[in-house]
Image (cartoon, rainbow, N blue to C red; front, side, top):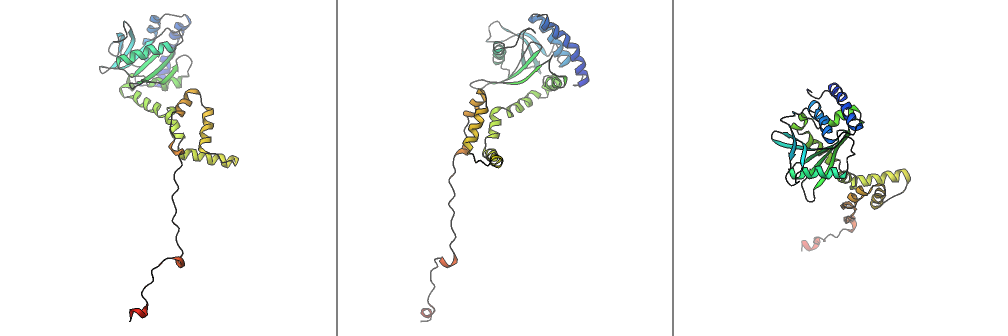
Amino acid sequence: MRGWDKKEFKKKLNQLKPLIQEAKEKELNEAETRRRLEPILTDLLGYNAFSDLSGELMIRGTGTDHLDYAIKLDNQLRIVIEVKPACVTLGEKHLRQVISYGMNAGVEWCLLTNSVDWQLYHIEFIKPVRLTPVLTFNVLCDCVDDLYVKMAHLTKRSILKNSLEKLWQKTEGLHPTQLFKATFNSTTINSIRKNIRRETGILVSPEEVISAFRKMLNENALKILNDMNFSYLEKKPRKTKIKKEEPGNQNVSPGPNPGEANA
């Protein structure tokens, strides 16, 4: 497909959807699912089946396991792909498998799919290893406009232009830690307190605002918030104001007596 034209994208996607739907309804095996996935990678996303896609690639450190697909561009592995049967619901064990492949291959992008559901993850090679979901979509259920935007990040053309890196930076910027940092600072908290006082007439403290937010959060978000330090909560010492003395009270050394000066 030339470029990333929405009309052509929609046309090709509609041609491929029946194949994926069939694989799901007939509960076809993994090999048959891969056969239906490959046209998505080639006809839709623009990869060359011979030069860009490595099938059944052996990964060191994983025993006899092989990757279903690996996207390789400019002699560099870009994405490892693990494929499951279309009728299988993607789960934690499948995620652990593809992440293990990515870690052993030294690739920071991992794609888990059953051709229906697609899950793209980013691996940060730090201690402990950090895994972040970056992109998810359902080829059969999501609207074409959403699929057009999301799948654009996975095209050969976009990856060569470092689209995934830009997507990761945006995802990182919207990570709960960054959102909390943007929300729980002195400027924002004071603004919230002023709005509450204006609306209700009640004056609340910064600690009370944070406590109220904690009650609204789920377990994972709450853990992130609890691990953060809020320096603005510390009371700053007040500056001591120097009072200006009135002119009549100023302690001025008396000058010489005129009479004494002429003596």
